[in-house]
Length: 342
Image (cartoon, rainbow, N blue to C red; front, side):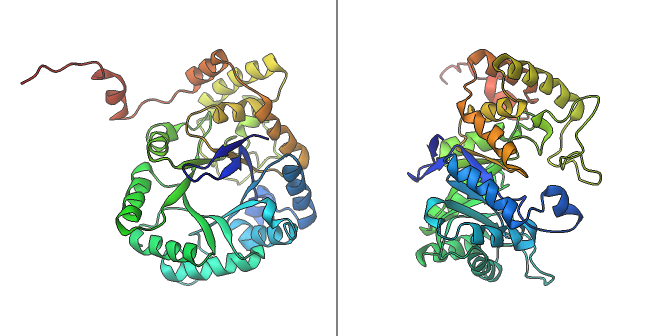
């Protein structure tokens, strides 16, 4: 395993991290996602730890809390070997305050996560989304208090835009509070929106970047092509939403190139897809989930695959997004203009 620094913290995390969204839960949605029992989850965690993975990612809402419960049981006696992340924001009850990032909800949910995880502290505590109602001042003061209480080591965010993270960092700096040390964002060969503003922001601010769904929920594993799909995967399951959204026609063109490069090195399509993300600037760790140990083992093989400049150029060209404004102006149109002195 290889390790990278999480932003400016000095904390080393594994290039590939384990996502525990497949652990626990019942009902139509969680059965499609994974719904694994504790014995199956323990085998996957063991495979990850044996390979040198030191970062495990979960959330209070995964499996309706069962993901955290399973990890608490599985990691008993091995807690110090793991950098554990969990998240808060999602609805955890029927009440009007059982959601969001208010002081009330965060304090309550942090204690519940600690109990389920059977630990005294969370290494990286993430805000799972943007709260349109709660001011950053309230959320960040609450998180800063938890850091000083020893219940959180680092705070982070997930699914925020670049301007939202930058604003939060500004609030933290103004109030002398602990700020977001990392951001978790979606990024893949079929979803490169993060390159527009998020990646430039994390590079400029020194924020770590954890990537979720680097395989686009199975689309980039080779299970899907123009003629057929594997219904055993969640993306192929009837009733499962197209999440993250993929332009299938364009995605199949991208898969054609990925498949060619995979054959070039005799590796899996998933390994090429993951190696591409790992080669991009700003990326700290890519989070992969699995239902079976062999799926995780294949994904872990991506760390041994180094794509050449030609490989990366081919993948970049077929998957490049249409530039949005003002990116297309700033990247070229006026870049070399010299204005005369007035």
